[in-house]
Length: 206
Image 1 (tube, helix red, strand yellow):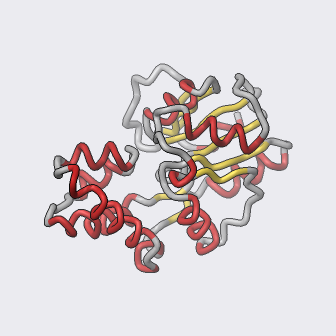
Image 2 (image 1 turned 45 degrees about the vertical axis):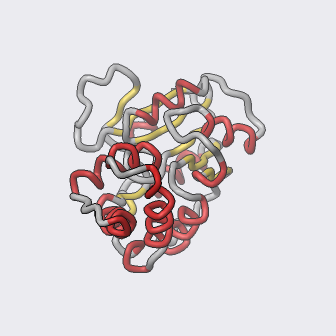
């Protein structure tokens, strides 16, 4: 691979947030008496928040209440304490930086939350940009999140840049923005995916 810039999804790609998001979604939706199952939480962590709200079936009038509940719960110490860094994350990103590659984060999560998690987990890496949902209007797979990152980086979309993520909407988002897309399929959920796909981040170094 000849990528010079690697943009990464956050949840499920760099950090394992599966367990931590269950109480977060529950805290938000219980504000409108909607119970959230672990299965729903795992599904919604791969969607942007608006997609999750629509999928939940709650009335649109309840959206602001649920969103605020989720935002409040995300930064609670007990929620962040449940987040784990994947074993390959730090070493792979360090090696990419050592090779002269630029790295960044583009997520449907909020940028301040991402920075808080990175600080709490002592992930001290020279990210060239951290783009969260507070910085764009349309979430993935719309190209706006990637285009926002490229604007910050001062780069134009081309084949030397890629977006790396763990759900199908991640490579789709990259391709929609005119860059490469890489799927990290840690649990072999998408064996028939025909694009660039690796079991973990180490595949980026091959």
